Image 1 (cartoon, rainbow, N blue to C red):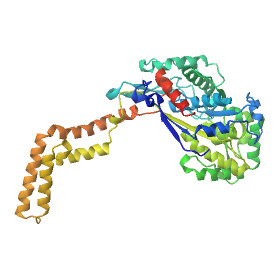
Image 2 (image 1 turned 90 degrees about the vertical axis):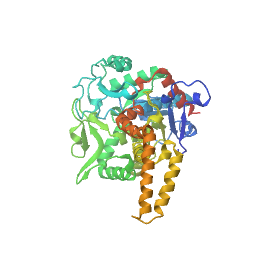
Image 3 (image 1 turned 60 degrees about the vertical axis):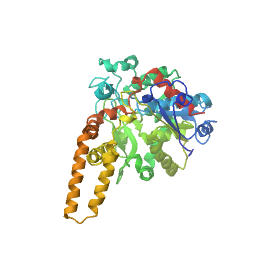
Image 4 (image 1 turned 180 degrees about the horizontal axis):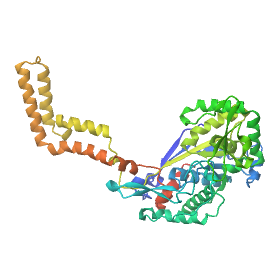
Amino acid sequence: MDQPIETATDHAQDAGEEPACSPASLPSVTIKPGWAAWSSALDQVAQRYPRDARGELGLDPKRPVVMSGHQPIVFHNGILAKLIALDEAAKRTNAQAVWIVPDQDAINPGTVRVPIGTGESLRVQAIELLADDAIADGVAVGSAPAAPIQMPTLEEASALEPLAQWLDQYAGMESLAAQFAYATIEHACERLGIEVPTIVFASQLLQTDAMGHSVDAMRADAHDWAVAYNTAVAQYPEAGVRPLAIEGQRIELPLWGCRTGEARVAIDTENIDSFDQEELMPRGLLMSALARALLGELFIHGTGGWIYDKISEQWFSDVLGIGLAPMAMVTATQRLDLGFGADDAIDLDHARWQAHHAPHTPSMVGDDEAQLEKDQLVEQIASHTPKSPEREELYQQLQALLDAYRDRHREAINAYQTRVERGIEMRRQIELGNDRTWAFVFFNDQQLEALDRTTRSMMR
């Protein structure tokens, strides 16, 4: 599926129609490869591996499966684009849409960044939807119980209230991961008007007969599995994945030991017997490898997964001699309209260079006559020997010229220094204005419709 990347912005703009949202918040979507490769992958149920896992997870073994997923957090629009693409791909191919939740991750899903103010007053504040003791450090979000929700009281966080109600509705779920996954996905689908995909958790995978045998296989041949894993990791250093530890007879396995309310434990050949099968969860690479080997025909990643899952492909090819289902990539950039445009992004290095040179360069403020006179004097100075009276006299003329120029254009020259000072003061505000990771709940319906339309337009 190695085809060119396709990128598009809101097509309503391209067609000359009324824009769906302000220019500052127009979405840009990138998809790789093109739709033809997606369609080919989902054309029929692959027969190169057993399909038992589908039935065990409540899926139809006779229909193709398209997959995507993300951590159970209040995610940004780059993730929302994957959800839209998942829906479009499933509808167009009559495939089953599956969203896989990595509930083995140790995260606090209740922390949400809120933009406050606009333009020069812009700042950010983190609010907590969960009580401070809802999840302890190091505990997998799938091993923490669902928790009561603190309704946001900050006026600027009012956009979180509908989601908070969804989260409160799911406070009786079996885990914090389930509570946040169902609430965020269902709320997002409600906003978009699309069907909710089947939600599967990483913790379920090893509990199936089809996938659970992988634990026995790794234990029986731990050294070769770990070596193959580390060899694949070394081939993709840009993914930032840590290799497994191999220390004599103790060999680390790509598993987490997860018990309710306890910090997750890295599993190795020496401690694995102290955990029951239902307490084992796959790490990220094993999770995606099993899903692509035994569950579906196509996996939609974001930019990070597109890189690190190449490790999974190499690993399973080396250790088992099998190929994985193809993967695709979908990512999107959509910014909130927070009082900043592209022109507000000040390049401080360039601004400092301008501020330094403006007092000596009349052309920078449009005084071409003074610039010509200066250039002629500099040329004449260069033609005389150092310390000669003629050179000294010309040098004094040059200084007088520049002093007069600075007096005439002091306001314009000072504007360059002011731009430097504003760049320093506004650096954080501009970064926030250009941030693409604000949660989807802060975008209005028109902005989400533009993202939906742009994403689907790429899949034609």
